[in-house]
Amino acid sequence: MKLNSGRLWLRIATYGTLAVVLLLVLIRALIYWQFDEAAVRSSLTHALQDTGRSVRIDGRITPQVFPSPGIEIEKLSISDPGKPDAFARVEMLRVSLAWMPLLFGNREVKALDLYGPSAGVSRGLDGQLNIADLFQRRHQDSYTLKLDRLTVREGTLLLSDQLTHTDKRLASISLDADNLRGTADVSFGAILDDDRRPVRLALTTPLTIQDDQVSLPELEAVAISNIQGLGETKLTIAGQYKLNFASLQATGSEVTVSFTSERPSSEVKLTLPQINASLRELTMPSGSLSAKLSYARSQYQLQAALDNLKLSEGGLYADKLDGEFNWLAGSSKVNVKLNAPLSLAGMNQLLMQPLKLTSTITTPALPRGRLVASMEGALDGDIDEPRFNLRVAGKLDGSEVSATLSQYGLIKPATRPRSTSASWT
Image (cartoon, rainbow, N blue to C red; front, side, top):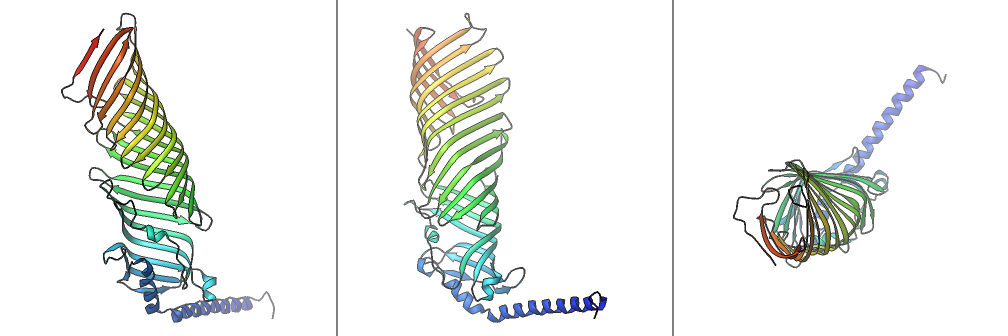
């Protein structure tokens, strides 16, 4: 028989195709033959028994062959420890297994796909998360977890913090993580539902997992919303992060936080060389802040250095804020240099005391074109109102002076009673 015969190659192709089809049918039959729905259901419902949690499956469990062998589970829910109420649900969970280990009787989970998951994560008054026990390592005899891909679609996450009395809801969650056993590519998207306005969230980063530690070497997260009076606002966070799920601690380096708004045009950038975070607080040894704002015919500029920042449920604090503020309007300019510790209790009650203030006013309207003041005192206020009170005493152009100023409104003063008093000696 000639090797270049058309009939020969037609036979080889036909028999080869039939062999492949028969092999696939045999593999599928083998998987279905080995599949025991009752055993799988029993194994899953008792998977978290040692934590006091119960797993419930209200839907079907069906085997899958292509593109990877595995199972599909419908309507799975997990309860809180010792309680019947479910804290997490998923409409459909697809578990994909690796081919080669399965042929030797080993079940190796390589991919998870979650469709319509929902969960409630809360922090109690003792500072503990209701999911802390799920991060503990467990030995499983029935399978090994070597996850290489994770996909989430149309997820919902409810966040509750009893310490700060805050509740948030993340909707339309999507997550794609590929190559998790190496350096993975992760993309995340969601909508933060707010009583006043929705916030669109997006995150991209490479990711490396080693034991209990997760490294995010190039994280970039973006939050976009529309705020009345400011137009579209954009918050961007970038940096390098490491998360330890065993200790529930996190560190960050070369972190930048940027904020922009359309109306008025503004830019704010916070640079943090180092961050240390726990469930209770966020600490930063140092930081630098720069801001620009254009409103009407005026320009505002701010440069500041901060030492020993701490952010917790109690508020934001810094041992020292050393800054310089400039206001420019035509040929007039105001330069203010200030030095003071910073306290923002509850993220709304501002206090800077003791405050050292040096200001220079340059304008053609002054007889000598310039006015210099050097004062000490305190600045306090309520950002929610917003209202600010400045109480200082010192020298104004060489004369002793004390002053108390109250300002309502941030950019444009609100129409409210305002008190201003000053005395010279």
